[in-house]
Length: 323
Length: 249
Image (tube, rainbow over the protein chains, first blue to last red):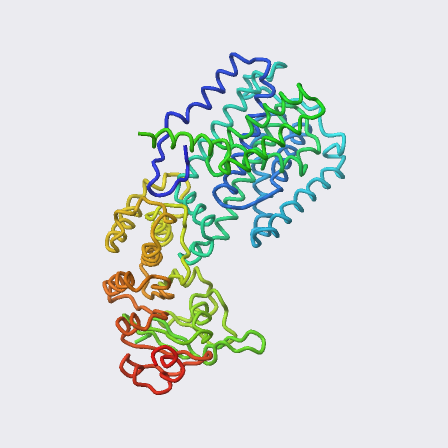
């Protein structure tokens, strides 16, 4: 279950790795009323994957990843409202613009580490939030941006009111992202990120351009976050200031930790469990649902530092070690 | 003939405190050279200036005759300068062979590749394995470093530096913390290293220094007190006073 990468890791896709896809397809057929929630979960999985790349593999702790998610979301929204509602163009524009912002901000903030870096990531998100808030002509400000339409995908598949097309669209995009991230994690580049996380000083001493490598990984991660944001805009046909919120960055971090950091599939399990639990608890206990989320997080932090996947790993190891 | 590594009038001050004062030092090609001195003599400062972690206040550092004073750590590694650390500085939660492979991959310039799996770069893996084999670590290659006994971790420390195929190797107390019973293993490894590599060893263990080094430089209070063969150093009156005397009387 562990996907650490490196030079002796077997990069072939294991049988268990097809499980999420089987589940996702089954959901499509057997839980049609949950498809809008499903689309949101799939989108957040992409977002969590982008964080896992820099946090789990590169060791960059950030509370400002919504800056890039929001950039992608707004770029896709503004593009649809002003120029074209072609979804793939929107995805591309969202990815590239967020990647560009990630590159520029990364160059500045990755010179620092630890708490200073954390503060800077927060600052960037706040700046983005204010820009979106004030540029009402473009973004709609506090009212958000809506009323645009997204064209059929490839001119063939129209977005329907049940969210079927949106769900499959998210699923296909996630699949492509997963495949790319997986290649990256198992590549020499991914291995070098692990090296940076494990021992920054030693990585310098073996001649690795640590800073440049972090900037590139941060750029890729920001681009992916932007892609997730654009996807959210297109599937919900609305963008609000929430996408730049500190809360979103925080929730994302919680989801990833809940699932397990640095394992690829932690980014799958975390958002799924978190968002489904949120959905269920909000229905059952409309006033106290955050209490349930809080309990869940406390339990994970106290008893399962590797997240839910960490528990499963430990369970499997225990079964195997039994005579 | 250029020295493998050279310093010219190298100085470092932290405010009013001078920790390196006009250090002229030559490490010849293929040398087995030791740098000794009491605590606070400025050994670590000198190493950090040689590797590029710390910029000197004045003076020059040359690798193979090329002035590298203005260059950073990474650029110096590319010019053949490898180092180990006094305190284990390893990739603790990855396998032993990955520890070495990270260095080999950087040297071979494949570490930027993003698409093919790392395991497909069999030349990196084979070289790393061969290197571990020469150090007697072949059986431990797939184990996580954090689980190795301390003495073996010290060998991994050396293995990573060797993965860079350095022309100059700085060994910062390679036997630090290793019981005397086991330090002979480290000495064996050092003795077996290619004579093409110029080695500078910074060490407190005098037995190891006198058995390994062909030349010894004694540093006190930021200056070179004396340099010579082990026999000359052992016989030197000043050295006995400031350094050996403290331990060997």
